Image (cartoon, rainbow, N blue to C red; front, side):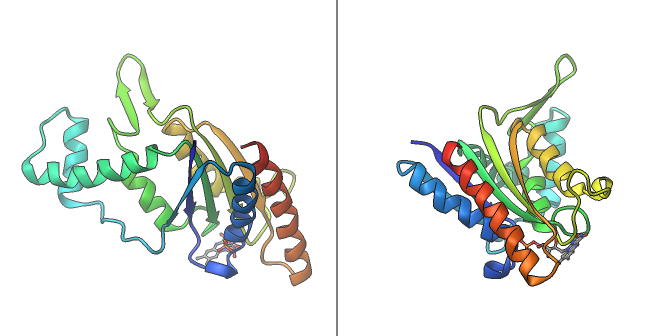
Amino acid sequence: MAKLLYIEGSPRGERSKSTAVAQAFLKAYQVAHPQDSVETLDLWSVSLPTFDGDMLDAKYAVLHGQAHTAEQAAAWKTVSDMAASFAAADKYLISVPMWNFSIPYKVKHFFDIIIQPGLTFSFSPKTGYQGLVTGKKAVIVYARGGAYGPGTGAEAYDLQTRTLGGLLGFIGITEQHNILVEPTLAGADAVAQTIDKAGEEAHKVAQSF
Ligand SMILES: Cc1cc2nc3c(=O)[nH]c(=O)nc-3n(C[C@H](O)[C@H](O)[C@H](O)COP(=O)(O)O)c2cc1C
């Protein structure tokens, strides 16, 4: 039995285009993999700790090979629990809006917390950086008001797939399937067609994921 972690990155609930396509994926996934468990992490309804103070110092202590103070150890436990909970999944589904060409701050905040030395990546002068979240795969649904996909001429502005895809790859999740939902700020009929097309792709990918 595999565990799928669904990370919801849009605060727009039923109006969210990325969430709508992710829901189409989940519906098909649960039919195709009835034995698997699905956990949802809605980044807009959880309280993410501010990454500063003892938590920040704890990270630098790890980077410098120093022992944690009692306060830093307590703060680091929060980080390591969150990283462990993320890494416990076998597969990931992430739905994310484009905000200012990149990802919303809540999504970045979450990854700023869990991407940590010794927890989700390692470094040694000999081998360099290595992702520790290996043997997993992810489907990422990227919604954007404009169009930035291959052939649009606006690919250079797409910091959304490069940021999230880069972060996931850095920690070892290199098997990524991107579903683009674009453009979502077009006429109603065109948007409905875009969502249907992306939903069909999500349905298809879910069968064999
Ligand atoms: C704060 C904010 C910034 C945005 N920035 C961009 C942008 O840079 N480029 C773009 O094409 N659309 C942008 N949009 C539009 C969203 O990407 C679009 O509405 C998308 O469908 C949002 O995903 P969602 O429907 O899942 O919430 C922005 C929307 C918001 C709220």
